[in-house]
Length: 358
Image: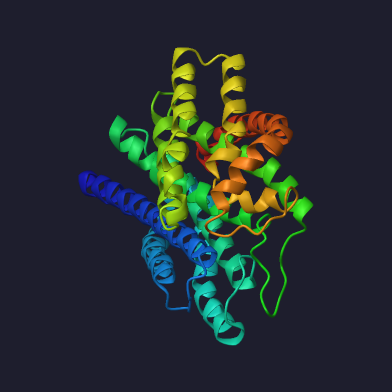
């Protein structure tokens, strides 16, 4: 009888874990489709609700929904419910927003045609992505300790990237000038957008890479794998669709090098000074990791040129000399702050809620 009870408990935990993994993978597909959709907008490709990027996006929603069903079915198990109370609530809220975003987006397109990045249905969708990806991340990180190095690496990328990409989408919504249409103008103030991007993106990069490092007990390789995965996805969805950006692919891939070097530095010694140094480097990479979209943010307060698909790389590299020297110090500072915030957050992530309340 004990054996059957133990088998039942183990099976419930496996199904719950699988559900969260499906949610993370689904949100990863959603963010990929969303990034592709932005690239299509920039290339002025004709779009309807039934476009290919939208199909990819809502296919990801269906994957995430299937995972959420497993999570909800297993939430009645007392031990799972106690240890994952917050993450389950985040998943439920996030999936509800994702499901509501689809019909909302369809109605918006039907009534107003082309929608901006910060349109109400997009904001609902992005918030749903953020909530559900964070909820799945919390559950996965609390339950993968006994897996092999390779499996941990895969799970780290699978769980952190959806959080990173969905929060990136939220931050870009409040900094990119892509939200003006024939009916509405939701564009952020250019100065606000530039300041917000300078503060938010270095903080996010440093926090996510530090998270990959800390949840795996400061082992080598997790920073490199997570950073490389993000860069490859950004390249596939933001650079490759634009043929004028293809010559800059080697430049963009070079961004992986400082991330790997920081990983090596922390492997040699993880003292405070080296941690601060690598966090500052992570923050400084904000201008480079978010190429080419970051061009549109800073261009508004620099040369204010028309950033066409063919002119994006030219304007970006011109701004390295004028904009980057102004933002590099704030980026470094925010990178350090992001790392410190991650160290604080990691304590609650690595321990069940029940142990915090007891």
